[in-house]
Image (cartoon, rainbow, N blue to C red; front, side, top):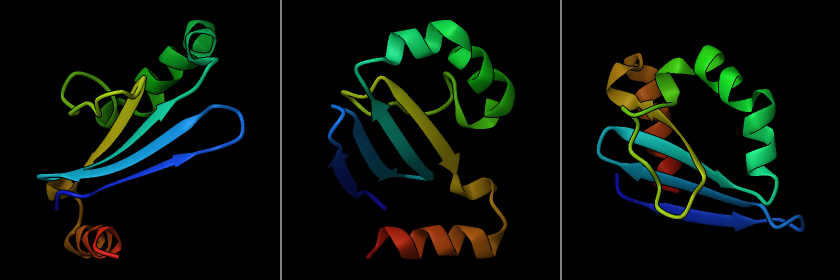
Length: 88
Protein backbone atom coordinates (compact mmCIF):
# COMPACT_ATOMS: atom_id res chain seq x y z
CA UNK A 1 0.00 0.00 0.00
CA UNK A 2 1.81 3.11 -1.18
CA UNK A 3 -0.79 5.76 -1.88
CA UNK A 4 -1.22 9.41 -0.95
CA UNK A 5 -4.07 11.91 -0.77
CA UNK A 6 -3.92 15.62 0.09
CA UNK A 7 -6.69 17.90 1.35
CA UNK A 8 -6.76 21.59 2.21
CA UNK A 9 -9.37 23.68 3.96
CA UNK A 10 -10.19 27.36 4.13
CA UNK A 11 -8.10 28.01 7.27
CA UNK A 12 -4.79 27.18 5.62
CA UNK A 13 -4.71 23.72 7.17
CA UNK A 14 -3.35 20.77 5.24
CA UNK A 15 -4.33 17.14 5.73
CA UNK A 16 -2.35 14.33 4.19
CA UNK A 17 -3.16 10.61 4.19
CA UNK A 18 -0.52 8.11 3.18
CA UNK A 19 -0.03 4.37 3.18
CA UNK A 20 3.54 3.15 3.32
CA UNK A 21 4.55 -0.42 4.11
CA UNK A 22 2.77 -1.52 7.28
CA UNK A 23 1.78 2.05 8.20
CA UNK A 24 -1.31 4.08 7.45
CA UNK A 25 -0.46 7.69 8.30
CA UNK A 26 -2.31 10.95 8.83
CA UNK A 27 -0.33 14.17 8.45
CA UNK A 28 -1.47 17.62 9.49
CA UNK A 29 -0.18 21.16 9.18
CA UNK A 30 -1.81 24.43 10.22
CA UNK A 31 -0.85 28.02 10.86
CA UNK A 32 -1.49 27.65 14.64
CA UNK A 33 0.49 24.43 15.10
CA UNK A 34 3.19 25.84 17.41
CA UNK A 35 0.61 27.48 19.69
CA UNK A 36 -1.38 24.25 19.91
CA UNK A 37 1.68 22.14 20.68
CA UNK A 38 3.03 24.63 23.24
CA UNK A 39 -0.30 24.83 25.08
CA UNK A 40 -0.90 21.17 25.88
CA UNK A 41 -1.06 19.59 22.42
CA UNK A 42 2.25 17.77 22.72
CA UNK A 43 1.39 16.37 26.16
CA UNK A 44 -2.00 15.21 24.91
CA UNK A 45 -0.42 13.37 21.99
CA UNK A 46 2.22 11.77 24.20
CA UNK A 47 -0.37 10.58 26.73
CA UNK A 48 -3.37 9.64 24.61
CA UNK A 49 -1.75 8.59 21.32
CA UNK A 50 1.56 7.08 22.46
CA UNK A 51 1.50 4.21 19.98
CA UNK A 52 0.55 6.46 17.05
CA UNK A 53 2.90 9.39 17.72
CA UNK A 54 6.63 9.68 18.17
CA UNK A 55 9.95 8.60 16.73
CA UNK A 56 8.78 5.10 15.74
CA UNK A 57 6.16 6.48 13.33
CA UNK A 58 7.37 7.34 9.81
CA UNK A 59 6.97 11.04 9.06
CA UNK A 60 5.14 12.56 6.11
CA UNK A 61 7.39 15.13 4.49
CA UNK A 62 5.97 18.64 4.66
CA UNK A 63 3.61 17.91 7.57
CA UNK A 64 4.10 19.34 11.03
CA UNK A 65 2.45 16.35 12.71
CA UNK A 66 2.19 12.71 11.65
CA UNK A 67 0.12 10.05 13.40
CA UNK A 68 0.48 6.46 12.24
CA UNK A 69 -1.25 3.13 12.64
CA UNK A 70 0.88 0.04 12.23
CA UNK A 71 -1.52 -2.23 10.37
CA UNK A 72 0.48 -5.35 11.25
CA UNK A 73 -0.50 -4.83 14.91
CA UNK A 74 -4.23 -4.55 14.20
CA UNK A 75 -6.65 -7.47 14.35
CA UNK A 76 -6.87 -9.09 10.91
CA UNK A 77 -10.34 -7.74 10.11
CA UNK A 78 -9.39 -4.10 10.94
CA UNK A 79 -6.18 -4.32 8.91
CA UNK A 80 -8.13 -5.64 5.89
CA UNK A 81 -10.68 -2.82 6.26
CA UNK A 82 -7.98 -0.13 6.26
CA UNK A 83 -6.25 -1.73 3.27
CA UNK A 84 -9.60 -1.80 1.39
CA UNK A 85 -10.26 1.87 2.14
CA UNK A 86 -6.80 2.87 0.92
CA UNK A 87 -7.38 1.16 -2.43
CA UNK A 88 -10.50 3.22 -3.28
